[in-house]
Length: 132
Image (cartoon, rainbow, N blue to C red):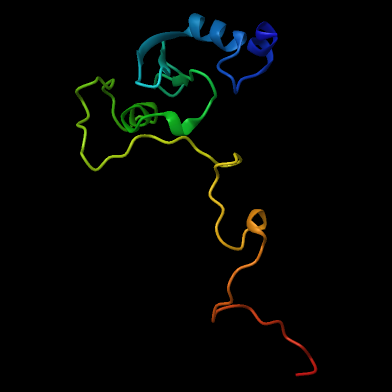
């Protein structure tokens, strides 16, 4: 079963075809704290820039890419990030994955998942009636 997942599902990690393409056309540049692996194309692309990409460890969630690696992936910074390139700040929180679509997703008052009822506010819409 795991073998079939590796062939057909890209959201549970990279597929076998992706891994073969990476091995053929790319070189490993580094890894981040979440275990994601970053690659760069071996030869120049048609626009003169080396293509860059990431393979995720586990579920493919783009919110699990740290800011320094995101900057490298999008050509904001050319230098490959290292452990000491980005300072840690005391106000930073630990990463939380994107919870949309899970039971832990944010559901504000009035959402259908919380009963669909909310308190009236002054800006509520009042439908027009021709009899009024």
